[in-house]
Amino acid sequence: MVVSFIPVMMFLIISQFAKCETTPPVPRQFPAGVGVDAIDLLFHYLPSAQGPVESPRNRSFAQQSMQSACAVNGFTTVRAAGGGFWPDDMAVWRSSPDRWWTAVSEAIHDAEQANCKLILTVFWNTFCFPDQVGEPLPMIANTSSKTWGLMKDYVSGLVSTVGTSPAVIAWEITNELNLLMDLNMQGRKASIAPSRGTPTQRTQADNISTTVGVEFGRNVAELLKSLDPLQRPVSGGYSMPRSSAFHLMNSFPSGKEDFRTDSESEFREMLGIIHAPFGLASAHLYAS
Image 1 (cartoon, helix red, strand yellow):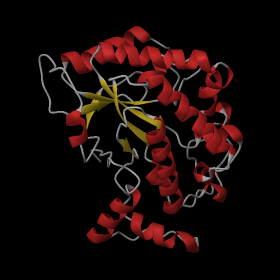
Image 2 (cartoon, one colour; image 1 turned 90 degrees about the horizontal axis):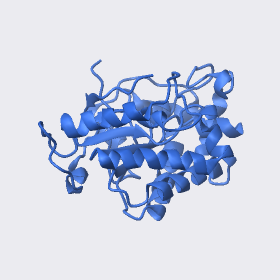
Image 3 (cartoon, one colour; image 1 turned 180 degrees about the vertical axis):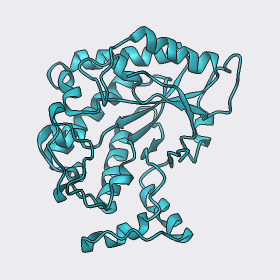
């Protein structure tokens, strides 16, 4: 796996970032908030983490990439995952947390040196933590579950490690969790890799409603706010809603997926619903 610095329009609302101090990049200069996606950046630091595709760890390469993106090409923000993707990526965190957090500290230090402002995705693969304890996906919103206990421990360690570093300017809690909401997960191959610690298939027990997803978002946002000394803005890390997101949400209780296209007013309402827990809205846009 190679860290790719590809320009993306990451956020609908970028005014928050304009408040963060940045050094004007050389030779090019972009407005505050224009960033690049390097979701696997920390995988060049994290022990045991390989992510969706195996790659050798190479801190020097990561340092050069951040220098190129921020100091040379003038981007002001870099989006990166703040943890592993597969359950077995987290093995060292579970067995030797000090070693794990030391690696995260090195990445944060290198970002500071490159004058890169990071947006950290706390849970890149939302299935990762429930899979580690053998629970279905909706347990992410159950504050009495083993899943939530594990997630809470991880958030606490991540925020403590980041501390008051100027290199981290915002959090996003997931990577596009909204695209899993209100679907029938039976038989779907969402984040399935048994050799990496996942079950062999997803089932209806993994069905997660918008209501549960929003509750999870609110729980994580409140946890981050309670721990973060800088009160950094929090985003859901969501993609643009599906074209039928509103209809799917309303049909979820019936168990029958309604893929009819939403109207503009329904699209607007859906944006308000899913982003309600956050001070920062996000939308991942793709060319096709």
